[in-house]
Length: 253
Length: 188
Image 1 (cartoon, chains in turn orange, yellow):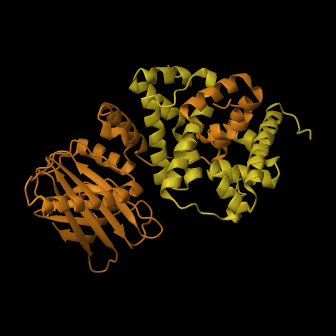
Image 2: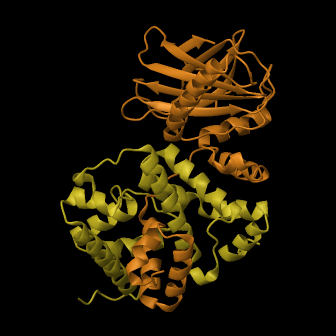
Image 3: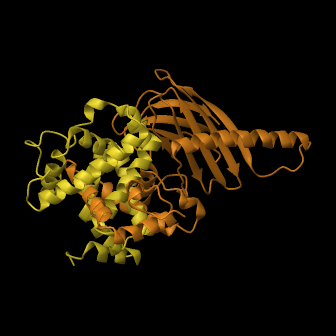
């Protein structure tokens, strides 16, 4: 192990040290006035920021999510830190009664890149699963089921999207990957919905990158509904319980 | 109650005191959001980074104690790292040399007074005493969160030069700030 010295101060500021190195550098800091003063001076830089009013409701959203998160900390899947959209959904669900479906017990979001990788891996798994089933002569049916869906663009909208639904016992995972969508502005998000008889529940949201690509992963822990439609709408903001925007892409399930 | 020190609040938060977390949140909401917005240039991303910061504090990730220096330095460092993570995940690095030098945004004459105006005046004076090139380094490294490699690309400099220039710029900033705080002129 290299001894931590003044050369590592930038790594320290960037948080790129391992936990062990961090501790060692901490010891160095205790003994090195030069580095300590440098860290303190850098710590004044944020005050250069222009004072900006935080968004309305941010405090409630963040605190709700922080505390909500801690209650479920024991569940390993919660290690994934939820994004704002997830948290808005959760906090709204506390105050609103969602018709028809029980609020999902557990919602987990992955960031788009991870979702994209997951989709690929799910598709791969599904392929392997089907192959195995074929070879096994149809024997050994499990409760898990996989469905891949191509969504069609509504009139006036471009883009395409693929969804994968994975049912495993009571849980339903929804992975969506979209491409060539129109650019979002302001607080807009693409919101995914699952519908039965025209009644929707939110099932994840995503933003697009510069190329109009986006992806989302969503999990319903206790899903008993037989959904008939999946749709993506362009919502004016994240966290809506019911769609306000127009349907951009959709498909029957 | 009002004047509980940051460290005291932090200790209470470690004991899962929700009120303490809320107090700490109130204390730093505006400066953190302003800082994170300056870094991310995106309100949604700034909020997301902010949330990660408070989740980390609540969970006690990367523990703070007084031997680590000022609480704000620790808090800002952690916040900056959360923002950098998000910027790298979400955004393609946008690179434009023209927008770089403008360290303190906007026209300071019309800018409303910040609650942290005193600190702002000090650090701004300190930064203005640096060369343009050093200001650029701080902007690219600290606020934009660019890697050394990216900065080398942007500025068309060898990697080693970038590293030493960042180091030099921060060292100079330290001296300059000290001299501002002592009310003297920079004697160099």
